Image (tube, rainbow, N blue to C red; front, side, top):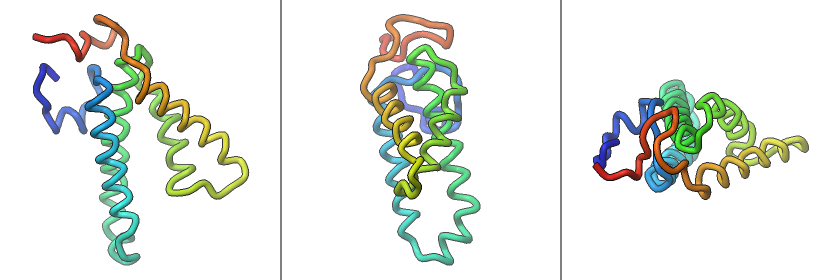
Length: 131
């Protein structure tokens, strides 16, 4: 990210690392967009959903992968988090959704609360390092 925020790289690239604050802000923006789209009228939501939901899914996967990289984990862990989010969005509806909710809680703590690895790791230099 090199100290400047590149929106295309932030939302459409899964390489590199992402610090906690930009991750939380970008994730909140994606959740807000998903919720606003959720409350749109039915026909508009059905037609535009074929474009909006895949775009939100791709952007969410890229954000998760970069944040997981900052924590020293493979970006493939994002698949588990995305499956859990889809299972409980917008509200859990089945008895076994508590397992998915536990995964979401783990992801919130792991990615939103815990700091990234200090220094460089196998995914690149620390995003907090000043140039």
